[in-house]
Length: 71
Image 1 (cartoon, rainbow, N blue to C red):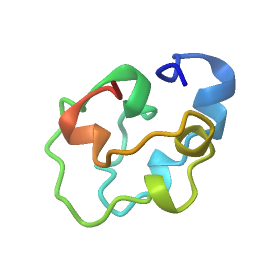
Image 2 (cartoon, rainbow, N blue to C red):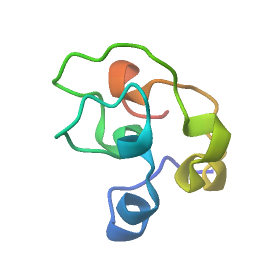
Image 3 (cartoon, helix red, strand yellow):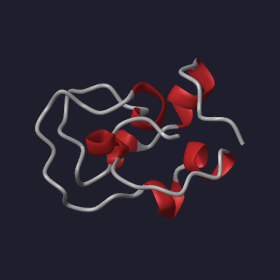
Image 4 (spheres, rainbow, N blue to C red):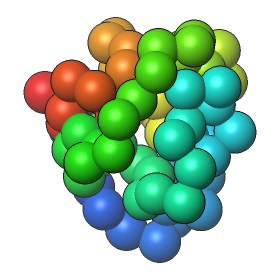
C-alpha cells in the first residue's frame, strides 16, 4: 500500500487532533506530512486503535508526529 497522500480525504479522516499526544493548534496527518515542529509529549498514540488513514494504508508504526512520515 502506498504512503498516505496529503489530500482532503485523508485530512478529513485523520484523527490526530483527538490524540492525547496532540500538541494542540498544529497540523495533523503526520503520517503524510511529517513530524511536528512542536514539542510532543508521548502520552499515547491512537493511530493503530482507530485512524481510518492508518487502517486504509496498512501502516505499522506509531508517533508519526515525532518520527515523521510513514515509509
